[in-house]
Image (cartoon, rainbow, N blue to C red; front, side, top):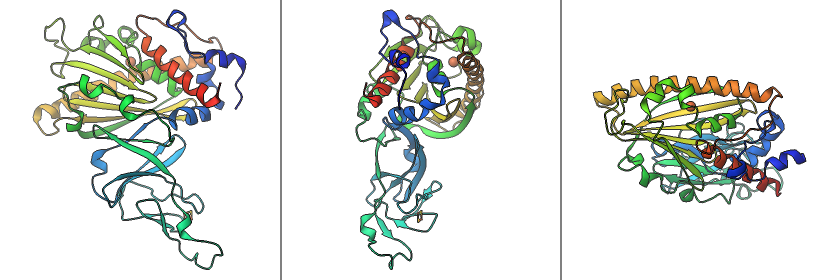
Length: 366
Ligand code: FES
Ligand SMILES: [Fe+2]
């Protein structure tokens, strides 16, 4: 695709002394979405499942990475594999839903693949000239596990997953993500470009103005951001100068907020993880998936915590949705091209937008 010179100027990495946002057109012009799929979603690791969904040989999870339907399986040798969920016959799906199967049988005409992605049989094809089942294989994607979470990348050269998440497990100790169990999922569809939601997550600058309830839980003065190569880390103590905070129902410790490039958030509080996955549905519509995990699902204390947590998180999310949808209207208006960033409070936004700039430039080879 060709980009006009003005956009290319905006894709130069922004330094702190001239920190400015991405241009409005990257949030409003539908023609950039395919470039973003290719250079961002299909070139970096995507969270697709939890280990509890892929325990036994034959377990399968159906998902989407960028524009590519994917099926992740545990094969007969207990290894995780990920394949394009696109049959080599006429592009039908070899799996439609999560479950357990000994093979991957296409739902269109029944071509059947092993759990290693090799075509094993194709009904009524024996009289077709020059056809040999051995020549057909489902394309593979890379799959890796981190702290019980399964990630897929469809590009062969992503940054190492260990580098992307470097230091997270150590920093949050004694919280142990591996020991967390899935509780429930909430989904939201928002009328804004996916990057509006990402930008909003990356700063605590809006806390006092958008989130009255969350402001009581966190300590804005101590709230800080640390930048890493592929993620940024925002954190705040949950107490007030060592004193118990009456608005904190989570327990002692810190709120840890990780934004992992390109579209994953890990919101970690004592005994609790909430993953947020940010997925474009179109250039101006975004799906947000909240998955909740807890270190203990059964005790009375946790049952109460889960109910409070869900209600409180939903309240905060509705506040974020309101402001993100208003920002999108501002970006659409033609009244705004780009803005300056607050270097005290918005370094996470600058860092993230520079990673977006880099990914887009790399794809365009400029
Ligand atoms: S598309 Fe898969 S068997 Fe026809
Ligand atoms: Fe917010």
